Image (cartoon, rainbow, N blue to C red):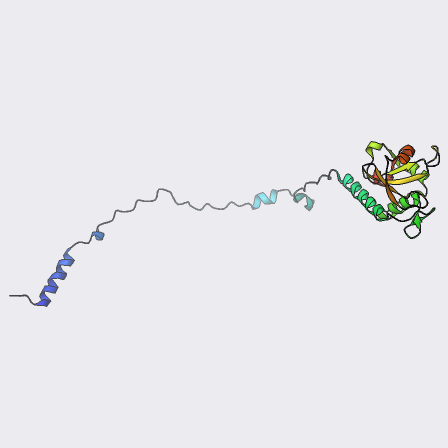
Amino acid sequence: MPFPRPIVTAALFAALFAITPVHAATRPALAPLSTPVPVPMPLANLAPALAQATLPADPAAWLPVASVAEPVAGAPEEEASDLRQALVALAMKLRDVRYVRGGHSPATGFDCSGFVRYVFAHAIGLRLPANSAAQFLAGIKVKRGDMQPGDLVFFHTRGKKRISHVGIYLDNGQFIHSPSAGKSVEVSSLDEGYWAKRFAGARRPEGIAQNG
């Protein structure tokens, strides 16, 4: 005789609740922590120590001592190099200005000493003596092998006992000058026969020599 459906359903639920779930097994107890929890320490009273401390009278002494920067080596040489470059640059711009005896500007023309004076005055603000003989005496003697751009080169063009011509040294034996009547400011070589025979020496103006 078949059982009624409600009775069968009730019997199945009873069987399911009778089964013990796997996840319901008893879990092991957790082990106590091995590291003790730090206990807060009472703060020390620093007031008595601060009251007895001796502070410097000068507040500036509290600040850290700043390191003093050492002077940059080679700065005078760099300044001298800048001066020489300025001299050469202006001198080269004045090429083809005609020679005029006693001339001292691009508008009037140049003689040799007027050309040199103009370049030094307008390029680096240095006033040189009025003529080549005085310029020769005012500078510091430089050996031919030690010449640098901007040094002055002198010549005997009117007898070996007299300085009568001056130019500005460029490099590689080249110099720029205002040569003579009928010519203009030009670049010449110390190795050319005429100038090689009349070369009297080189001088370095004080304004350049002081900077290296």
